Amino acid sequence: MIKLETAHIEEVRGIRKLDIDFQKGTFAISGPNGSGKSGVIDAIEFGLTGAYTILIGGAAATLDALRQATRLLAGGRCRRALVLAVETFAECEALWTRARWLAGRPLVESAACALLVPADADTPLSPAPGRSALETLARARAGETLACAPLVGLALARAAGPAGAVTLSGEWRGRRAALAIQAH
Image 1 (cartoon, rainbow, N blue to C red):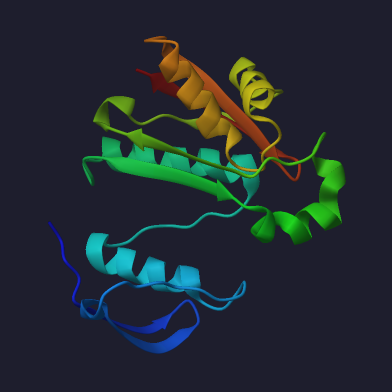
Image 2 (cartoon, rainbow, N blue to C red):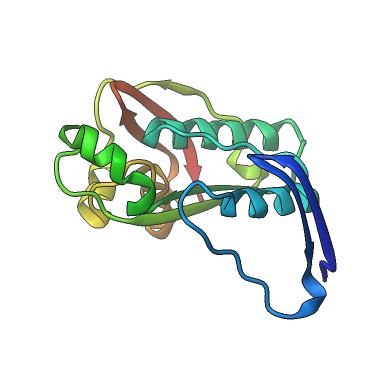
């Protein structure tokens, strides 16, 4: 078990210098958008686990993250990889206001993750001519999301049972991508 007693954060995502004493009891982070709440969590995560990557860019970026995770696993650089996509209205409101024509229907506030293991292997990311069956199914089951649909599709494929390689696809601002991955 890991027990944090203190944290010293300096020059991380806009945080110039911050010292936190966790021994005083309950710890909470609150503040308006852009005030550094996520930066505190990211700094603590980096201190505990090492390097990580944040990708921004809808479903295509989620597919990039899955691809990067499978490459790390295939290269033996980690034993497990977690890919997480989170969309909240507070984070997406400005984008939705500017570009709501990109989504066919109202956005769904969502979060999805996939735990990958070495059996997921190294898989190629490739251009996709159109929506995969899983992308269509994910939209039907979960609604319109910006980044979560590929992870929802993978979860649906895994829930259906061993199916071998499945194709996940997604699009963001005209960039359509697809990834073949094992659904086990």
